[in-house]
Amino acid sequence: MTIFDLQLLFQDKMKPLMTNAKKVFSTTEIERYLNEAQGAYAEELASVFEVNEKARRAQDKLILSIEEFPILIIGSVPLSDNSILFEKPAGNELSRIVEEQVISGGTRITVKPTTHDQYLANIENPFKQPYEKLVWRIDVDEHIELIPDASTVIDSYEVRYLVKPDVIEFDPPTLEFSYPDYIMKEVVSLAVNLAINSLTVGRRRED
Image 1 (cartoon, rainbow, N blue to C red):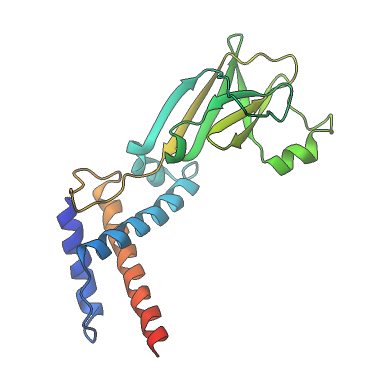
Image 2 (image 1 turned 90 degrees about the vertical axis):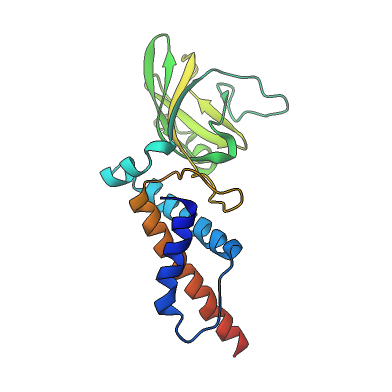
């Protein structure tokens, strides 16, 4: 499937829905609706990654793995004396971390995603703090802050993650999509719904 196949499929799906309208969508508008639809679909697929085999297979091209090592961040104030900072995989293109662990002295330790609110609520509770088999992970701007207990030395951080799908473009044309054809067809259907909804909203404003 090519970018022009997507355009034709979009137009074909629109025809029976536009019998009483004079609106003709430009390639720029079609491109925008396709990307909006792909973004929404990406969020849905990522949310069920762990429990849906179809979703996992559909995102094969977007799954990456990396081993990272501690870095020094100038100007960053850590939450804990035990905090260790790492680069956030893929930066702003990171969609979701799906599996992660730290290596300490050759031993793998579980990492638990933790919000700032959870950190503040539990940091004084001795029964809910990090320990030798659990490390907290908090996202901070472009970095990741890992918080182990005082006795754990983190040597590296292994993470598997999803990145956002590539932007769909007509000029220059996208040559390869992030999802297989059957998913792209569903993306087109959603894009058509978004376009129809935009026309409905426009008519209401005119009325």
